[in-house]
Image (cartoon, rainbow, N blue to C red; front, top):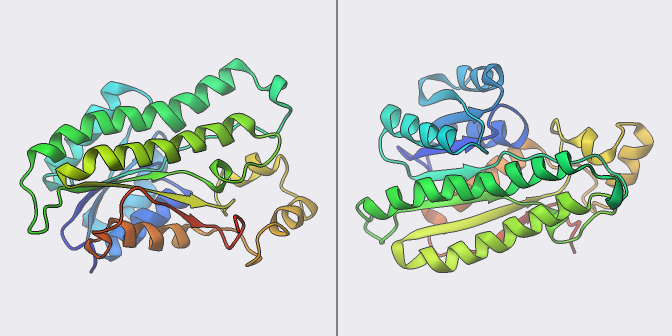
Length: 254
């Protein structure tokens, strides 16, 4: 029970990695607000996790929704301990000059602005709470990507947004460490999530084989892989770890 009685928010929790993280957190004793823009998806995941999980519908790129999300978590479970900024989008693989302005704006809003809005809302609350015995006040975990370390071609603006997440994580870690707030990130490789088809452009055996050939372990990331890694980084066992962007990638970035 690594996260016993911790209160967590997981954005993009209605599917994929977010569902895997929510599931692992509840199994390890946390109380989780499962947040998704798709209310039915959030309800499905939370409904399968029992009373320790509550669904919440929010657009994480809208400030009022983010404030309501944090208010709802604290009203339901108490002061927040863990924020997981997992929600993310991509554009279809294509030449850089063909990516539409609307797609670019959507990537900036969900992959970047949403983290800014959530951090802006959560950090004052974490700073105001009493510190634990080791001086800790909370953890922020951001979902980055191997794309921010070793970019794939034809995904330039998605790659760039994930590079931003890694840099933001490091910058926040340095700034917030004196306040007992750790900030970490995960870099998954392409995974068995709803975004996989978008990354590949088409979901065919040939395209899967092409992607898998770049992953030494020979398989895609699974939701439970990210759940396990997130659980460790957000637990007290990782109290000396901040500013890292842990690769959960089967060796792709070696």
